[in-house]
Image 1: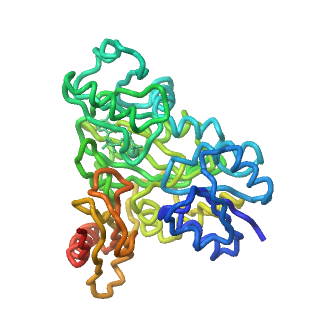
Image 2: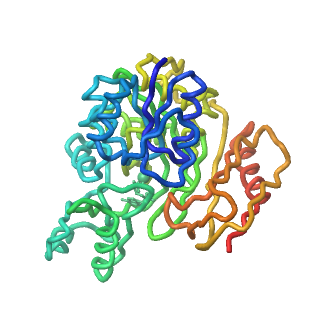
Length: 398
Ligand SMILES: Nc1ncnc2c1ncn2[C@@H]1O[C@H](COP(=O)(O)OP(=O)(O)O)[C@@H](O)[C@H]1O
Ligand SMILES: [Mg+2]
């Protein structure tokens, strides 16, 4: 029996755990303790911090695992890279993982290899004169923690008066002693999911993003296909390919965040794992396969077949759309109801919590309380159904 080690036990790892079990793979989950739904699904659980590389490596050795994987979060990607290197498992390298999980290293890599990305500066927290270093950046700028995700530790700064409070906000959300300041790109946010196996890109799927505008943008939903002008689509693909090559990402799922500004695609960041907020589901619906299964199969060393022409620019997959469920206040869930009539085009309505659980007013990705995913004959149908389905869901928070 093959064995897989899944890092994380949260909602983004649950589909990996389920599919691994369905494939008859012995499923080991490692995560810090907490109220995580993956624990009760796994065959075996280790309550360890997934960023603790030594602990995870010793578990991997003891269990003689065939693969290690995660989805929807960057937190454990570096551990995956290191364990894959140490044990010769199929997955991204430690070097690629490091670039993919440090926004400064990533930006430096893009600069070196000519990937289009916002102009930036590195700033150390103990530098009293940091305003000088960033004085040649055009305002507004983004102050960014280099090692966080889900829009945490990232804030838009419109004027110099805001520098100090923004700096302190970043400081509260990072383990690093430096951060990145980069120019704000005015435009439309979008992204792409992709997969690279044995050096070959298997597919590139651009998608539209629904963005919640708080202190910074927070992607709260997605849709595909994203009907961009063919020349813009080609430019986005070129930037993605250049970034994947520059970062030497291989044998992993890819989650790319872009901004389209005046017809040009800027790369915000690229992760070496599948996207959160229903993005793996977006891939599954669009292409008609279980994307989590592909991810798991490759992680245990199989050569995975995709049967997709990566060079084709035809956008002929199944249209679909998704949206997070959010609370507009801090509080406790009193009740939650899905009053939608059964409909095969409502792909999934998920509540992340139970009545009685505490939830937050939505500000960043991890504050999500559920999601809705729909599909349709056309994108308009899928989006209309998404709004209808959302209207039929009632969650009371007090
Ligand atoms: N240079 C930028 N210009 C405009 N918006 C940005 C920029 N950088 C980040 N953002 C906004 O902040 C969000 C989070 O930034 P990102 O670098 O993707 O970090 P995270 O790892 O938190 O997703 C983006 O989705 C986008 O809305
Ligand atoms: Mg992002």
